[in-house]
Length: 178
Image (cartoon, rainbow, N blue to C red; front, top):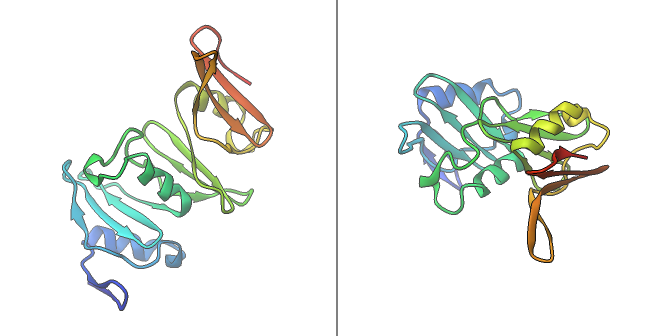
């Protein structure tokens, strides 16, 4: 049980507490703001000031922090009953990038974030092309937009994500291209 004057006493399950203690800089997550609870899929989930820890029934435990966390939660809408949402479970801890950014890898998407910018979700063929280009080390840099529809005269032509140094477009006819 952890206590903070702003949040009161919060119960942390054994696996969540162990993960929280293992994180090199616990200030990244901050203090728990709720008890460890169970999701509809029987996962353990604990919300913190700046992130969450999820413990899967198979024993995997991952921390999602910083603006990666905010984008992840935002992808689920306002109802945590939608957990893990359209991008799936985390498959590793949020990690710091060499270029002052953060990255979270999920089952069906990656989230990249730099500085005070919000986390940006990449998925599908656009994510695959970004990885081919070198990911966070690619010349086009980190994403600066979420995926959006690319239209001409209200006709949907495909989808795109903007990056610091370019755009990756995807269409059914041409696939993903820079």
